[in-house]
Image 1 (cartoon, rainbow, N blue to C red):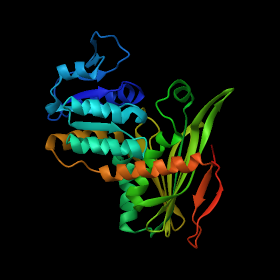
Image 2: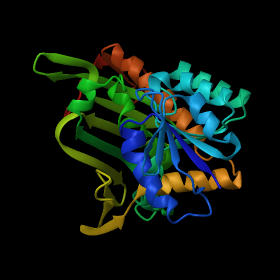
Image 3: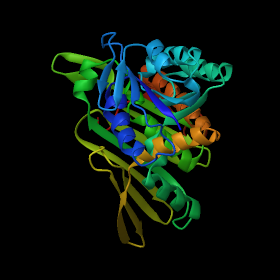
Length: 348
């Protein structure tokens, strides 16, 4: 059975991981050790603080005194910009089972460091990717695989939410490409296979006289190896939350709505064919499914799944960031030549 160390007690660590672990530990007694979760938060004093079943300490070295690395899973919930540095310290302290918040890394350089550390220290890496463990995603994969609606022509993903307070008050993310897009890109690669970036744009967040660079929203266009196109649009200044995926298929269409928050873990699926639409509501506690599966694989010493997909996601998003920073997007026309045009973000 495994203990838990959470590094970074911000929105992801304290707001998402801890509540899910509290629920899951009560039922999966064969997986989770009956000991408090240990959290590292340097902002606290050197005195340990007990908070229900969470023990908060101020350093990784103090956490190492309390935990046996051979029986511990480390949740790395630090911002992408510092993840490789923190992973190095975690690895040097002897921890080997690592669960990383998405994205796996913030750019190609950090990705190479993460992969080098994984090889050098024989780390077992898993990435927190709730959409890949979502009941809705499983339905979409089955629909595409069984071919009952024909080939996929295009897919669009909309990921809108208001993110003013966190963007104004924290530098945990430096680009809108790191907020919602990793969820969508992983699903698109799972559904449609590998892809190349053919368009990208990013907008600043503007609030009165304050500007937060690159945090207003993003748009990404992909051309997949099978010929299908996909688009991801995220508006982080939107007045409403929306997580929608639309598949345009030869024999109809599919619209999915992912759960927009942990307070209501239900997804919705609409399938239209021959002019008739069928709607289904799905229980979809995807983060619980993601964390539970990761722990079971760690307990069984099974191979880490989806790591190649997460590596590819980082590579595509890194290319998109560089393309958006140029202020242009590259769109390959049908004759295969490359054209350039000014980038805009639709809907953000």
